[in-house]
Image (cartoon, rainbow, N blue to C red; front, side, top):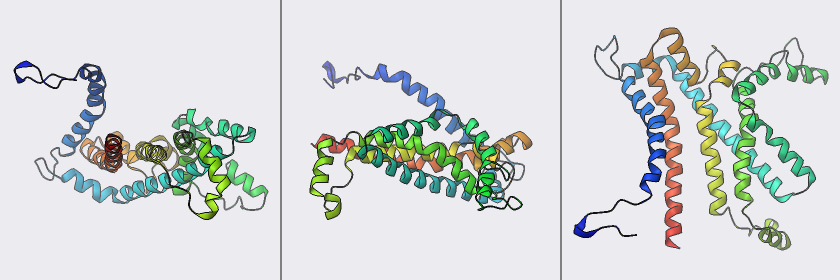
Length: 288
């Protein structure tokens, strides 16, 4: 493709018009809300009388425990979901039989269930006298007079894991499916696992794991219904619940936008890592 025309004028790549609708959509749906939130988070406050960091100071004073809780919940569940999804993906890749096919089909069901339905299910399942406590009481592990209290970090983690593990497994297993069967048979015949000389994850496998972790992390940060229905107005809770609380009860859009910017920052560093890894991958492909 020619990069310039007569007279030294540069030609635009012919694919730019095809990319324009997608770029415009991304700018309107993601870039503009982010910029708007940042601008409104510096809105004039009664204490300062001028634009400043007042909303961030107030957000930190009121919700620093929730910020830490959100970050801890997100990191823990991302690690949990990633670990379990990799283990199941390896199992389903190496054990291709009727049992693994049936389990794989069952595991995909939570992917198609909306978070609001999952939240209602978890509310009934994890309640003090819900299905889980009743089942444990029947085998003598729990006293229903003092049932397990799961409307907290533990219950939230269980709900996220139930919903997100199949989603992450679908992506990671897709990457593992790209491994040729001849490599698996060669590793088995040579007993590479026992000798410790098996190769590490290759680029397409690593890429599927990174994509799954980034998407799971972003979804957990932005989920509202599950923490709202499980934890509600108790503290600590997640930032999404705090944002809704500031808007619905106080009409405090400044602090709500400040909390939104904090949520954006939590996600931005994972997005930056993903983009950096993709750039490195593209450079490696060019170098070949």
